[in-house]
Length: 299
Image (tube, rainbow, N blue to C red):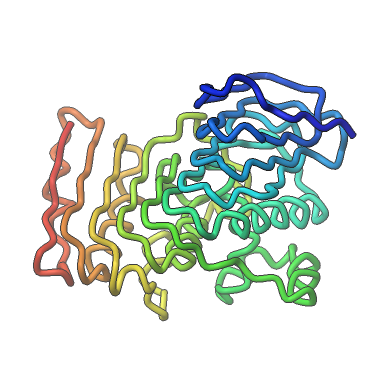
């Protein structure tokens, strides 16, 4: 296993590595480096890549990981983390794959519990479904064929950590395959104050189309019994950016859920790409639990 120790210039503050390979451990020891960006990292060793940088403030891991695992060591100074990577574009995914990827995501989130600002991409949200299954008995019926994996995870007592995230950005359009992942992040982020959901910068890949194709978004949100802590006490700003006409229904049910449950919400901004379509009225018809909530539109 090859370890790479990044020292570099004493005035270097931002380090970007694109399409790099040849190491399994990346240690940033230069205290002046505050931002690290990794994109399309290829690791030959099946054990994957481990990143350690105790003085780093911002970390971005994006692009392809080429079916490899990513782990974090000492990143105690991080305040901003962007996990917008993806593994395989196409399946099939085996039960072993589900366990491996869910373990990786749970490990990454555990290493980032202290981070105040976080970004997650489509792949991470869709795979958070595996972790979220423990908290949703109804959804277990949809994915019964994964019961072996569920038993393994339950025996190990695996749970997703509570995050201290105050600003969460989800780089994915709202659609059936990411709804459980969004719910999972809301449940895991009791201190969340700002939620931003944008159109995916890596396209709309569906990893669980067969399992999630019949998911009813409206029923999913309305069937939630336990309220999210962040909606009761903390969430003040919600931004939906890049809304397209084909996803109006999924966004409508989410907006309705937020407006009806976010008790201290101050502002919801909806940025849509739907010229010639009178959609604003549909988003203002829902009751609001917060008397201060304002819905704003822009195109």
